[in-house]
Every structure is written in structure tokens, then in C-alpha cells.
Length: 260
Length: 276
Image 1 (cartoon, each protein chain N blue to C red):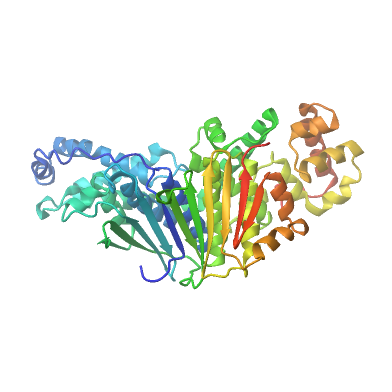
Image 2: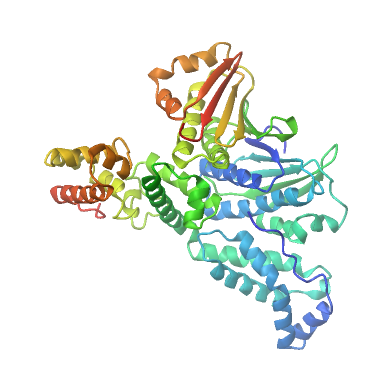
């Protein structure tokens, strides 16, 4: 949610038409600076409203200020309409163009994925430490994210686990990567899915305890701490064992991660 | 907006409820396969209109915030309505919306805007957004309604969500539910269970609806959610639960530590947000 409106000190209006005239007709750069300064809160407010957390705020603010400069240069003060009604669409248009040109709509899924992974890691870490999944508020506090961002990340995690991991990523046709690929090599669960069917035959070659731990982790979906309790080893050992098993499986199968 | 919208929401004009509107919007955008850039425009404009209702519509008092979403081909229509003070004439309409820049923002991001007085008091802003979305939804014949009662059962505290058709319900309800479950301090695994439960119930309920609409009431109290679903065909509510052991419903119900009760045509399910 955007914060309360910031009204630029435009209404004060002392000498606004004069300032525009001084810049646009007289080429007075000081007048231009004054105008830009006066309306910077407007640009800032629009950047905050239009921006999404995937984009660094400072970057977007720069784009909004660029839009403001264009608006100051192009505004026709003699028409009698308020500057804001011209500046708002000009600044928004600039930000929109920036998003479009930077391929934001395509990159957003990746940003969302990265955040989803962070949220899920935190979720597991907190679950492991406390034996209970965190609330959304706890995750938000822990990761310094907003409630909404955490909710969106949880939704993304759900989506990843529902769609086929080998389905091509939307908009990612140029490199034909799959969700599985883009989720990162340190992600044990997706690694296992990636290794796919070949894993099943390779599993038979693992010692029984390793197989049990893998099953508890990936089939019964227990946390590492829960597995540790069940099997009677430490959580650290579970973690190490999982990593070793996955490496072992990878070696046994012909498909190295990230190449499919 | 003529006819029945695909999604209809009614909440109290509390700041936290604007998030529910955005969650519903995200769900609809997903069902429509809308572009992220388009959704950002829509979200920004709709948030402005909602924030206006939160901040200005009732002069510091509480009142309803109503939002309707519809998705005819090539377009997304959004109506944001309050039952409050109404528009003041002329330039003040601008001032009315978030300190002066709300309306210019809405104008800049939508393809058409109309401001209207609501009969009996209040204002409505109708926004249209051109979209290249691959899908659209026709005006629903039957409706599914979600009634969200936020804490107290008083009628003024009741919010309403109408969703149709089924693909919309499937993507909108779980999102709104997750935000409400978060509000009730559910841990994330319980949120996920609650979402799955609602999806399974929606699937199973299909075909058991007697009226032209289905109401799902969700009452939010700390650490639990109460769902009331109805009206269902007489006896059907009971059968939904009887059949549960054979379906994947029962492990969910068990995990969520719920109590259930069937009264007439309504199925009530209580979801516990904490381990008991």
C-alpha cells in the first residue's frame, strides 16, 4: 500500500507562471532548478506508487525525476491547466517506458523467484529452529519484507510446486530454461526433481539410512530437524547427509544439474 | 458496470483491506494471463482509488469499500465504490482523490475513467484498462460469493466477494484466503493447507449449488478462520464430509485441527491456525 499522499508545495504557487516563463522564455536555469526542486516530492510520490519492490527505488526515482524534467521543459503554462495534470502522466509515462525498455515484465518472474527462494529458505530455517512454521509476519520481519511481498512469495512457491518443473518459463523462450533450472543449484528439492526418473534406479545404490533420510525429506516433507529427531542424528548431520546423497545421485546419473 | 462482474468484493474501508483487493486483482490477472506491466498499471490505479475510499470517503468513520472486477475481451473493468460523502463538484473532485494526484494517476494509467455519484450517497470510479490478455470471462450466470466477516459478526463488519466463473474462483479465493489467514496469525504451512482445503472444497462443491450463487463466509479471529459455505443442496453438505475419508480432504481437515458442523444447507468448517 502506498503511503499517504504527498502533496507537492505547488498550491503555494508563488510565482509559478513567472518561474515557467523565466525558464521557458528566458532560459533561466535557476528558475528551472527551482521548479524541479519544488516538484521533486511529486516525482518521489509517483515513483513510490508505481514502483514495485523488484526494482531499486533509487533507480526508479531517477527515472521519475527525468520525467519531471521533461514535464518542466514542455509544460505550456499559458493554457491555464495545473502543472500536475501534465506532470503526472509525463512522469508515469517515463517510468512505464523504462519498465518496458528494461524488459521488466520479463525479468519480474525471476525477481519473484529469487524472493520466493529466500522466503522458503527462511521458512525452513525458522521451522528447523522452532519446530513450527513461521507466520507471515515473522517471515516479513526476519527478511525485512512487506506482508504483501511475503504473501506473493508464498503464492509463487505454491505455483512452482504445482506447475511442471520442466515447463518452459513464460517469456523465457530465448534460452528455453525451465523453472527447475532457474531455481538454483543449492536447492535440494528441485535438484532431485531435475534428476528425475534416473534417480529412482540410482537410489537403490545408496545405503538404507541415506535412502530413509531422502524419503523423509522429499516424500514425507519433514524438516531437517524433524528428520534428525526421527533418525537419531543431529540436524547438521542430516544436512550433510542430504547434500552428500544428492551429490552421489548426481554422479550416478548422466544429467548434471543445470544442463537440461 | 452493467450486469454481474466476475469478482465483487466488499470490505470495510480499512487500510489493510486494500491488500485484499490487490490479492484478488493478482488472482484475476493470473487467470487472465495478463502481462506484468499491465497489471502494474491496474494495481497502481486501483490502489489509488481504494486509498481514496480509505482516507476520505467517510470523514474518519468506517464504511464499505466495494470493488467490482470484470474481464470482457480485451479489457479489464474495475469499479471502486464508497457509500460515503460523495463527490464535491468541480475541481474538488481532484482533491477528493488522495490529495490531488490520485485522479491524474488513474487517468494516466487507464484507457477510460468515469466518476459517478451513487444513488443514496457515495461515489464510484469506473476504470477501464485495455489489455492484451489472452483470456476473457463472460458475464457470469451463476455466482460464487465469499463473505468475509472480519472479527465481529456485526453486519456492518461484513465483507463480500462474488466470484465467477470457476477458473476465477480458483485463482482469486486462495489468494484472498492467504491474506486473511496471515491476518489470523496462521503459520505458513497452515496457510497452504487452508488454501488447498478451499480449492478442494470448491472442486467438490461444484454441482451442489442450489441457488444462483454460492456464499463462502470467512470469519477471521486470531489463530482461527471460520468458513461457512452454502446454500448447498439439502443433505449435500453432510455428504461432502462423509465422503471425506476417501478423498484427500480428510488428512487436510485433520492437520488443520478443525471442527465441522452442518446446519441445513450450510457447511461450517473451523480452521485452527496453531498447533493444538
